[in-house]
Image 1 (spheres, rainbow, N blue to C red):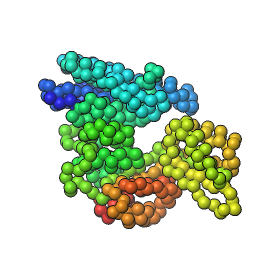
Image 2: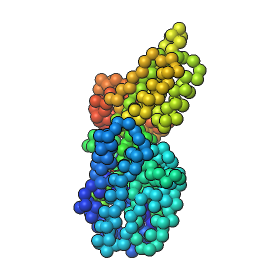
Image 3: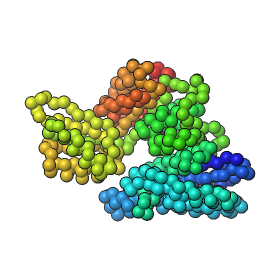
Image 4: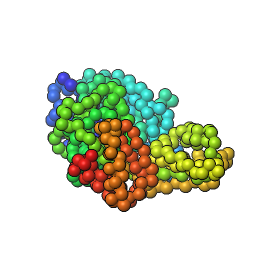
Length: 409
Ligand code: ADP
Ligand code: ASP
Ligand code: MG
């Protein structure tokens, strides 16, 4: 007897026919005693369509109303899938995030799971049901719905699997697993049989959209193995776990990731004195604007001013602009600009310490491709470069060909 959480993403549940295919597959694979929880996303592009709908009303982020709107997508899928199970003779019950006991923080659009009380899910399983849970949503202590950020159904699935002590969390998607880079950009991308939580977290954080970063964090927290695999084939996918089981699966450059949801903010001629950086970044943090890369340039000492350049996600541009306009009232600043056509391309490596030349090799490839690097940041296991969005695919293919396929790293 196993307890398994299976998550199906938007493209996997895009049509009633696809929903029936999943139902048939789940029932085919289910052993008699298995207890199955299915977590689903909104059908196809529903979430994007809902965002579009809201944009036709306003460009301002009305967080609470937006989250209520976006959470409806997943609720369509859970009802349809439960009906499909019952049509096949399998008792099933659908649950919203709130009904599944998922308590989330009140930062709209970026809710974090604070607590899970899966007792109602367990009770429904005990009655012989398959439980179909809406991904991407939780409920605050005040009873408001918050969504968990784009791709958040992954997080719902892994967190629920962890809280319920499931044997495995299977993430079914439209590719066969985690690859060395996005296989839609580089068709020669390699499928990785296994990857560690730490490496996957870095890949996801740097933009590999196959898993939401917070889902990987949940995997680490609960130690639940995650199997990323295809909805449309029976092939084994990628297992994300604590460490490699096979030495030969360890590689130097694990993958290449890109993130095009990036905006570069430049604050020009800011007063150069203690406390200024704190004021700027605290004001952004107060509005829940996540800042990623930060560079403070050194002008000549006589200037007494500095330029501060940082990156945020494009979703936060309206909020960030409001914060900066407010800051300008009290802070000396010559000018500012926001550029929404930048992107980040990164490599994830198995430990930079043993690879002193790897960053230089990456920059060499950018140079061969005549791609300008605007900002560089490094961590123990990654190097990230901010470049012009128009060159992202060229950059990914060249870096992947040289450092992963030809293993120059
Ligand atoms: P779902 O709707 O199932 O959640 P997503 O679109 O969120 O699916 O994630 C799957 C997509 O992630 C793939 O179609 C692929 O284009 C993209 N992707 C980006 N990087 C990677 C990677 N390293 N490995 C696999 N897929 C990746
Ligand atoms: N439907 C949400 C999105 O499109 C959540 C998810 O699919 O994971 O981002
Ligand atoms: Mg996804």
